[in-house]
Image 1 (tube, rainbow, N blue to C red):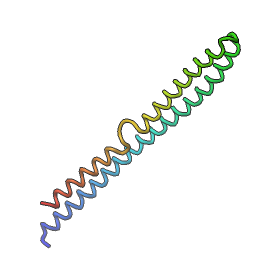
Image 2 (image 1 turned 135 degrees about the vertical axis):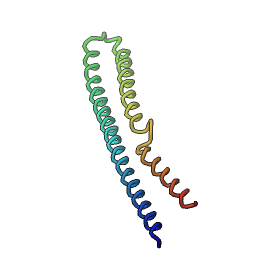
Image 3 (image 1 turned 90 degrees about the horizontal axis):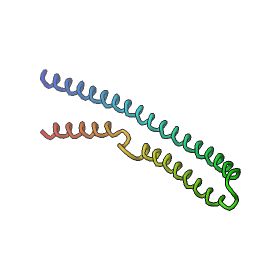
Image 4 (image 1 turned 90 degrees about the vertical axis):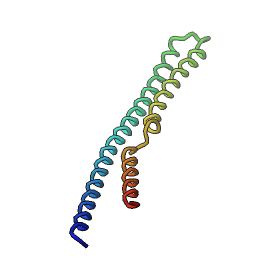
Length: 125
C-alpha cells in the first residue's frame, strides 16, 4: 500500500472514531432528557393520585355534613364527575409525556441513519 492509501485510511479511521464519539455524546444527552421526562411523568402521576385521594376524602366529608338528605345523591354525582375529570386530565398529561410528542432518542437514531446512508453512498462510489 502506498503512502497516500495509508494516510487516507488513517483519516477515515479518525473520522469514524470522531463520528462514534459524537454519537455517544448525543445519546448521553438524549438519555438525560428522557430521564427527566420520566421523572416529570412520575411526579405528575404521584401528585395526581395524591390530590385525587385527598379530594375524594374532603369532598365526601363536606357532602355528608352540608347537603340536605334529599340532594346527597346529586351532589355526590357532581363531585365524582369533577374528580374523575381531574384524574383523567392528570393521566392524559402523563400519557402525553410518555407516548406523545417525539419518539425517545429520535435525534440519535436519525443521526445514525444519516451516518449509515452517508457511508453506504461513499462505499458505492
